[in-house]
Each structure stands twice: as structure tokens, then as C-alpha cells.
Amino acid sequence: MVVRVAIALALATTLSACLATEPMPGFWPCSSDANCIDSHVCASRAGETQASCVARCDADTPCPEGSRCLPSGTCAFECSFAGNGMPIVACPEGLHCARLRYPLGTAAVSEGLCDVTPTCITSSDCDPGWRCASSDNVLLQGLSNLPCAPLETASGCPAGWINTSLGCLASCDSPVTSVSCPAASTCMTGSLVPFGARESESACHLGYYGAPCRDDSECFVGSCQDIPGGRRQCTETCVGANFLTPAMIEAPCTKLATRAGPLGARLIFECAPADVEDVCVARGGVGSGCRRAEGLELTEHTQDDECGEDLECRGGLCTRQCVVNEDCRAQGGETNPLANGYCNQSTGYCAPVLDLDAICESDEECSTGLCAPPVSPFGAYRCDNPRRPSEFCTRDVECISRRCVGTPLSLRVCGS
Image (cartoon, rainbow, N blue to C red; front, side, top):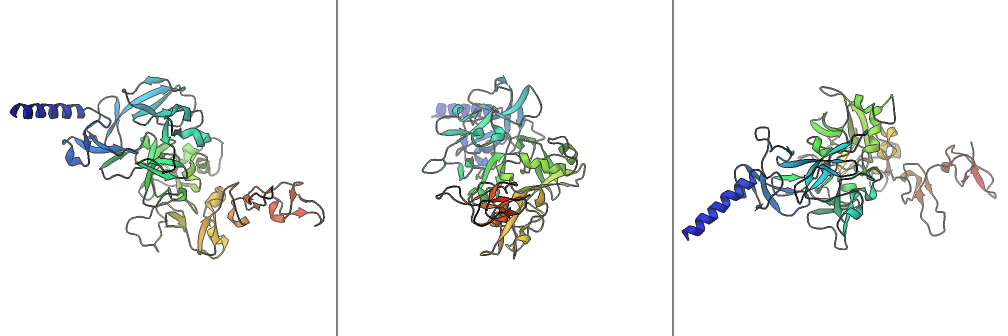
């Protein structure tokens, strides 16, 4: 019996020594920090259901050489790869090099962080039943070292993943103290409501412009910067935004909307004063996802938080009470038509306008201002662009000129 105890103590000492230098989640399962030795925390990677003890890191306890301290207070191995995805600094066996940045310019080497999630260029690189992040995002197509994610099945997403209209997203809600999202991803809280998630659910998503962040490792574009209100966002300085294409002298921050990703489709970007240098700040337009700040009553606004001026966070969406459609024009909405809304008379609150080609019932529902009739007898009305002069029409609202000319008995066309 004494021998068995001695052997068990020796094994425990050996495991603790291994864990002390292991940057990534190891093989010592846990349910809280109490299960780990003093220098370790109980942590999990987003999407995983089993947490494990990993080395804790902070300013006083740096990670081993070749690894980085993540905002979660845990370490991750660093890696790098060429433009075609070929490894330059490879990950340890069993880990995959996940891209840290959207490539800008012609850099020959890209940086990454090692992760348990497989990476890809296309979905054919992923395991059966999984898809690549590039499969439904034109901005990502052709890029290597992107994350794979499971496909939704008839029974929904796997344990540890949240079902949304964007597909299965790794959950970053966990009872353990530390949860890490994959490289260049951030934990989105509340922003997923427009995509079918509950306001209380949080999931990892690539850190596009306007995404909340804790440091640069959570930003796929831009960098993590302080913004007014005591928050941080993946963004650019107002001067830095001038160097993004296309060139614009006025309102350079509006260019960030083209790289705000699906979660940022209804964001409004404006230049705001900051302590060191003015920064581009994103605030939610009508229908943008949000999470109500702790302790606020339903009647209180969160305009200094995630929603734009004069909007409140209600049921996970930025909105406001209204009487007419003009009440739902978001401040700054002229730079992003999707940030505006229309007044839903049945609720008395602003509802988000629909994007091009979305099924609609009335013109006011469309960001383009036109709900066009179907081209076939069995089709649906859809949001469409107003028509140019000489194109066929039936109503004035269908034309850019707002003039549909001709007689009721002849084909009518848009006037100039």
C-alpha cells in the first residue's frame, strides 16, 4: 500500500511538472480552479465540453518562449505560415496553426496561434460533417488557415456549439474561469440575437471591425483599441482609416463597414475623440445585436454602450419607440442604409430594414425602398434596386427618378 501511494505521488508530481510548461489545454480534466495546482487554471477552448488544467499567465508570469499569453490568462503556442498555408514555424503534433490576421499588402509570412480546431482553405480540407469559414463568406475565400466548424444536423449543433443562421458557432459560455476563442476570434455577447440565438448566449466569431475585444489576438482586422465609454473594439484610428481603400477624404471611418462581417452589417462607423488619437467607433443601428448592461431596467437606454444615439437595447436588438418611419432613421444611417429601420405599427417599435433580394411585403421594409413584384406567378415579392431610365416599371417608386411613364394600356418605363 505504501508503495502504491509513493508511486501515485510521484506520478502526480510528474504530471504537475508537465502541466507547468504546457501552453495548450492538457490531459488533466477539471471542473474548477480547485482541481488544479496553484500555478494553473481550469480552462477550456470554445466549443469543447471538457475543461483541463493549464498554466496561468500574466504580466508577472510570462508564457514559455514561443508562446503567447491570451486574454483568458492562458498560454498558446505561436506559429507562422506562407501564403499558401505551408508551415514555417509549425505547431506541436495534434494542434493546427490558425490565422491571426486578414492579409493586407503582400506579406510573405503570416502569423498564427496553435489551436485544437482544424484549419482549412475550403470545406474539403475539413473533416466530414464540418465546413470551412470561407464557405459562405466572399471576403475569406482563397485564404488559408481558417477555422473549420461543424455543420448543423437534424438534431442541431454538437454540444459546446450554438445554433445560428450563420451556422454552428463555438460557445464561449462556460462555468469554468477561463474560456479562449480560436485565434482572431472574439466572444460575441448579445450580438447573435438577429441570427437566431438567445440574448443570453455567447459565441466566438471572427473579430471584424466593430467587434468587442480584449487584445489584438481577438481582432481579424485592425487592432484592439480603447474607445469612448470604457470599451474596446477591433478598429482603426481615424487617420489609419484614410489608408484603407477606396480612398476617401471625408468620413474615412465609413470604409470599415465593408470589413465588418455579417454581425456588423447594421453598424454605423464614425470618428470619435480618444485620449491619444481619434478612433473609428462602431455603434449599432436599428436591428443590430446588443446585450443590455447589468442592472438596467427595460425602460432605460444603453446609448453609451452598443447602440447608436437615441436607440435602446431591447430583447437583444437596438431599437426605439416610433410613430412614423422617420422616427427610425438612425443618426449616421445615411452612410449605411441597413442601419435604418421602419416603424412596425403593430409593436410601436422600429424594425430593421431588409437587405437586397430579401422576401418582403411592403416598400418600407426594404433598405432600397422597393419591394418588387415576382418575375414568375409563383415567386415572392423581394427587395430590389430602383430601376434606371427606360427600364420597365409599374409604379413611380420602382424608378430612381420616381417617374414611371406611359399609359395604363401600354408598357411603362422609368423616365429620366
